Amino acid sequence: MSRRKLDARQFAPEILPYLLVNLCQRAAALGVPPVRLCAGLGVDLAELKRGVLVSNRQAWRMIRRALQLSGRADLGFEVGVGQDLASFGLLGQVMAVASTLDEAITLGVRFHPAGGALLDIEARSDSAGITVELRPRLRDPQVVMFLLEEFLASVLELFRRELMQPLRLQALELSYPPPAHSERYAQILGCMPQFNAGRNAFFIHATALKQPLPKSNPALFETLKDQLEQHARQGVLDTVAAVKRLLGRGAAAPQSVAQLAQALDLSARTLRRRLEEADTSFRALHNQVRAEQAQALLEQGVTVAEAGRRLGFSDIRTFRRAFKRWQGQSPSEVRKPG
Image (cartoon, rainbow, N blue to C red):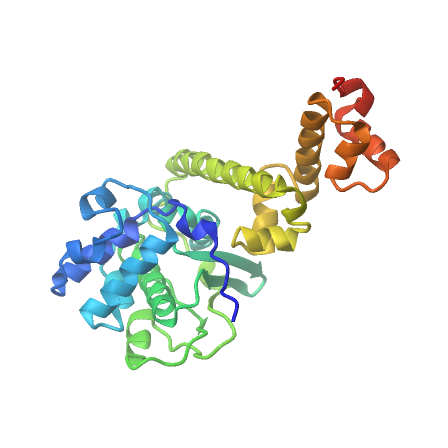
C-alpha cells in the first residue's frame, strides 16, 4: 500500500503558541506536568510563553499527548473555557473594540492565523446571517474533536466575558459522532450540535450580528487593525514565495490552482484569496517564474530552442512570442553566446 506523502507545511514553524500555553496550564491543573507535554518537541513552556512559533505537527503531538496523559476526552472544552483576551493575542484586542458583532466576527475570520488558530476558517454571509466553516488540517478524530471543542468554547467565552456580548449559535454542525460527553455541548455552547454532519460549521442569525459591542472604539480599532494587516501582509508574501518555489520545479511543478493548493495544504479558494490580496494570480506567478527561468537559461548561453524545450514549449515560435510578451525583448536579444 502506498504511503501518503508528508506535507512540508505541517513542519513549518508558523503557529502562534497561545493555545499550547493554555493547554500546558490546564494540563498542569489536571496533574500533567508541562515538561511531559513538551518532551521531544524541541520547545519548552518558557519558550512558548515568549511566543516561539511552532509547527502544526508539534502542536498535534502535544495535543495527542495531553489527551492521553490527562484521560480527558473533553479536554478541548476544559482548555477553551479557561481562556481570556490575552489568549487571542493582537486579534483579540482588535475584536474587543469592534463596533458590532458582525465586524468582530468578520475580522476574526479574516485574520484567524493571528489568533494562533490550528483550523482553517472561512465565512459566507447572506441576508439570513453568517455561516462560519471550520476545517481541520488533519484526520486524527481525537485531535479534530479537541480543536473544534477548544475553538468553539474559547470564542464563546471571549464574547461572553471580554466583549460582554454573548454569542448565540443558531445552528452547529459537527462531522464526528456524539462523544460520551455530548451533554457538555449544550451546557457550554448553548445549543446541541447536529453530529455526523458533512462539515464543521455554525450559523449566526443576521439580527444578532447587528448587536453593538460595549467596548467599541473606532479609532483604536483602525490602529490595531492596521497592525494586523501588516502581519497578514507578511503571511501573504510568504504564500507568494512558497508558490514561486513550487512553480520553479520544472516538470514536477503544479500545473493548476487545484494542484498548487493541494501541495500547500490549502483549499483552492483560500489560495486564490491570498494571491488576490497580494495583487497577483496563479497565471501571473506562473508566467513570472517561467520568464525568470528563461532569462537565466539564455544568459547562461543556452540556445533559444533548448531554453524553450526545458520550459515545456514544443514550438520555438510559441516560446519566442511568450518570452517577448513576458520580458519585452526577444530571446535572441537576451541570450549570451555560449
